[in-house]
Length: 202
Picture (spheres, rainbow, N blue to C red):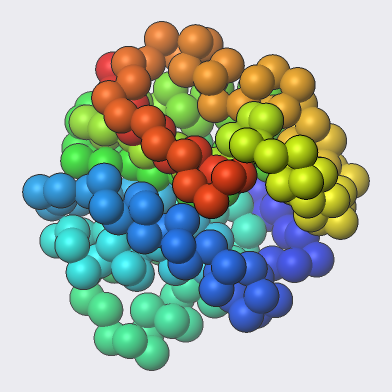
């Protein structure tokens, strides 16, 4: 399966990635004593590459071949031997053993999945990793203008993307996924009025 949006690849790397640098920093602050990490919905690989500085091995998976192409180019350019990227979704996760990873991460990826896929992937992440970090939109945002801004950004991302975001929002965001997977919350924090970072285990 190849899931491609108009903004995938270089557009995402040049425009979106720089605006999420602070959020990636919040995720990395939660990662300690990391031998192995997997980022699910890794996009252009920005988080994986930054995590490779604090983890011995870092892996990224994504359904978009354009995103993986950019990630692999960056890996080659930076000569990173402890980083790998794979094109795929839940079928890739199923290859790995229980608790094979210290951390699995979802960085702004879970809201754009359909409801069934979200729950399946989070359950599988909780199986393969000791801890799962979900960084996504805070529902609702801390201020009304921020909330409207998020809705606008998601609207221009495309119809299917927006439909999945509305479903994510309708169900209450990350909290609904915690309930559906019976995950345990280890830590939770908000960032920049519109994001939350949640550490989970099972």
